[in-house]
Image (cartoon, rainbow, N blue to C red; front, side, top):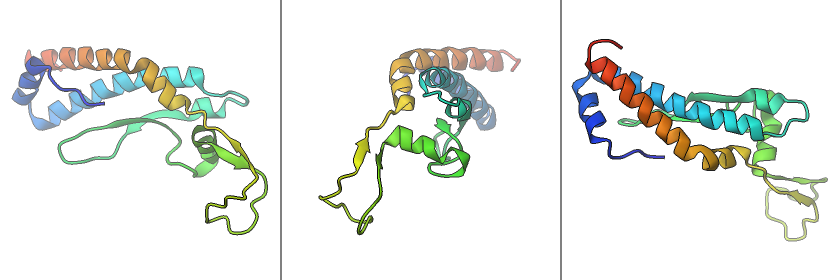
Amino acid sequence: MEVKGLREVQEKLKELQKKTSNKLTKKALRAGAKIVQAEAKADAPSISGTIKKSIKVRAGKRRKGSLSIVVGIGKKWFAGPMFYAAFVLLGHKIGKRSGSHRKKDPNDKRKAVPPHNFLKDAYERTKNRALDTMISTLSESVENAVNGGE
């Protein structure tokens, strides 16, 4: 999601030091991501509750000139104790692999389990509410920083 516009807030952000403006922007992104996280936790499958507990908000990849926040499971896909969550989100097949499993086999008769991407669904349902929260949080934070306090 990319936010454009908000000229007044952008003008005031430019008045602040880069470190301060990045800090305020991250705070706003995190506030919006918390809304998506709460929705994802409510929608996550909960046989044992482990997937729900592992849905985290964390910093995304850094690139010059952009900031990102990620709502995800564990540290990375198919790793650690939450490796099976990726199978739920992305789908998988049940049964023994036969022959060369590296190639797409047209004779593969294993049962396909469709993905249940509750993270994406949660984002789609809450993106407008999250965006509004990010904008209001950023506006308030910038106003406070420009007017003397942080």
